[in-house]
Every structure is written in structure tokens, then in C-alpha cells.
Length: 316
Image 1 (tube, one colour):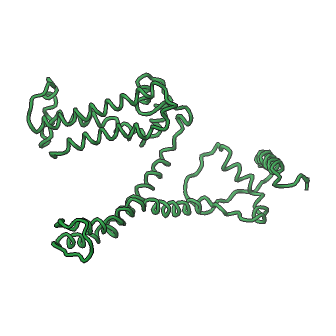
Image 2 (cartoon, helix red, strand yellow):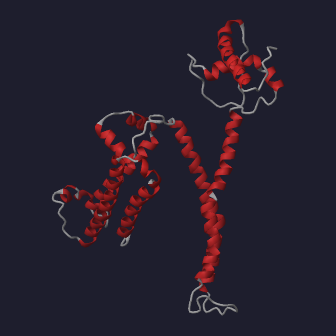
Image 3 (tube, one colour):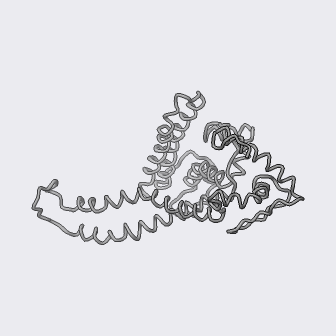
């Protein structure tokens, strides 16, 4: 706890610098308001890097600070040991934008409504967080899709961290302790640090490959999980079911029904659920309207194939 204020200073400054560095390629396309926002963010980072350590020092040294009646109002928070009410309030104010961003990420419908709003305070908050864009504005994934995406990465990262700890890191703990216990080793070859009393070089050589693999195996786990999830989703969606032209001809009678169910809005509510089989009814006399709608689409497909020379212009 004694060095936490140093971490806060570095953390706030790093956030401001990363915001500048990561957006550097687009500076020549920025407007004055965008540059002004970046300058304000740097000033805000510097201000927080000063305010938070001052509040932390105040809770250790019990120095009176010019907060007036704020400390009296927040005196009920003194039950937290070694953390004053003023410091808690400063941390809470610092975390409010992050909590707001997390809430907008968790609830896409709220973000969609905010992006389509023209209120002055809403436009100011959006201007502070990111430039105002119009491409894809208000178009976000559904709540269910967001939950699935978040669950995918949670399971992936849990598997990655568990494998890294139990297979890569844990087996090296005891060897590292044994290496550090060895003192005064006389090597037969040249020593780069002859006056050293510890074996930090051997420990670094032991841990360096593990650390490199630890930071690089995320893409391997992503490839594994994306393959598994893609295979499961493809099995439920029946992808690749029609593989040859013969299978296409045999199921051509059911295509209008599938077209009507999947691509046209239906008045009846769609029954939700998972199934490995999807059957579509063939065209009957009372479904001539569906066949007529599909015929228009199929004529456009055939005309497009002929324009691209995929098929000939013969009528047969």
C-alpha cells in the first residue's frame, strides 16, 4: 500500500500516452475538436495523477486538506480501515467513466439509444469518449450475441490461464528455488558476471521461453476454440448439407419453402430451439405465392450467372 500512489501516477500517465500513440496515424485527418479532446485527456490524466496520490498521502499523514464539509459528509465511510472517505470519493470519480463504458458494452440497446440521441450532454460524453461517427452508428449486436461472444472469450482465457499455470509455470517453481539456493558456482567457461552471488542468469534462461510461450499461445487457443465453435455452429446450421448438383436437384422442390422461412418475414413467431435437422415443405398449390417470389429471385440469380459467364445463354 505504500507504493500504490506511484502505480497510480504511472497508470494515469500511461493511459494518456497510449491514447496519443495509438491514434497517431490518424492525426492528419483530425479536426481541431479531436486534437483539443486529446489535449484535454492528457491534462485530465496529469490531474488525476496528482489528485489521487495527494488523497492517498492525506490518509496516511492525516494532513488537513481544503475539502471543507466534504469530509464531514463522507465520515460514515471511515469504517474502511486505512482508506479515508476523500480517497474513496476520488477513486470513485476516477472509475465513473470506466464503469459507464462497461455498462454501455454490456447493454448494447442503451448504447444504441445514446448514439442516436441528440442531447447536448450525451453528445458531449460521446465526444469525450470517441469521435462522432456515422458509419455503423446505432448498429450493434444483440444482447444474446454479445453474451455468446463474451462467454467464448471467458472460456478461452480460463483454459489458457489454467493450462499455463498447471503445465508451464507450476513445474518450474521448485527448480527455480533449487537454482537460487546454489551459491558460489565455479564455471569452466567464461563468466559474464564473475562477482555475482546469485543465479539470476540461469533463472532467466529457464523462464524466458516459458514467458514467450505464455504471451504467444493465445492465438493457438483461439484457433482451437474457433474451430470447435465453428464446427458446432455449422452442424446446427446444416452447413455443407448440399454438396453436389444431384443433391441440389433432388431438393430443389423444397428451396421455395426454405427461402420463404429464412429470408422473408413471417407473421408467425419463429419457434426457437436447437436442432440438427431442418425440413422445409415442398411447394403445394396453396403456396404458389411463395413459388412466385422465389422465381423472381432465381431469375436474377440465373441472369447474374450468365453475365459472369458461369453458365451459357442457352434456354435449356
